[in-house]
Amino acid sequence: MIVSFTGAQSTGKTTLLNHLVDKNPYVTFVEEVTRRVKRLYDVPINEDGGDVTQFLIMADHLQNLFSKDKSDVTVFDRCAVDGVVYTRWLQLQGMVSDEVYGACCRVYDAVIDQYDVIFYTDPADVELVDDGERSVDEGFRNDIIKLFNDKLEGLDNVVVLSGTVEERLNTVKKTVEGLGKDIII
Image 1 (cartoon, helix red, strand yellow):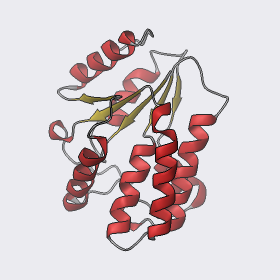
Image 2 (cartoon, rainbow, N blue to C red; image 1 turned 30 degrees about the horizontal axis):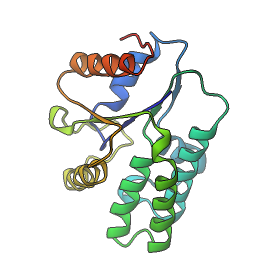
Image 3 (cartoon, rainbow, N blue to C red; image 1 turned 30 degrees about the vertical axis):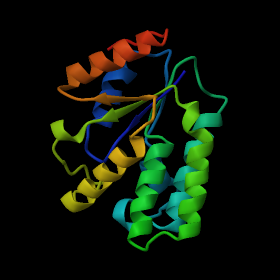
């Protein structure tokens, strides 16, 4: 089973994953792609990204999906939805070419059905906090939220997480159990 968290920056994805990691040693957890790409390749991210950054991010999403190192339950901190949403924002700003955006969309179209469930973290319940890597620009975040809402509309495998951390974790548990797997919260 492949599970992913998705959503704009500072909406609680990593907080939820941190609660799950220690209690679920049989689950493979995959760290957030964008930060890993930044560390590995020293490329700009967020509103400073460009063609190379977005190609690297989408390639990492592909590698995560097709890695042989997954367990029966694998949980990603972000997925191809994130890659295509942020690439779209950059394309609208003229920082990513139409060709790169088109390539990212083709990757997204080819893999979106690989995710059994995508948990979208509702931004309404979480304030924007500076962690030293994420963007703290409210306008950028609001643009990204709108693009996420547009992209996720109509997808059958999306579950919205809202409320407190505990309420969100309970939704994760119920959803995963509904798909025949166990996860400890």
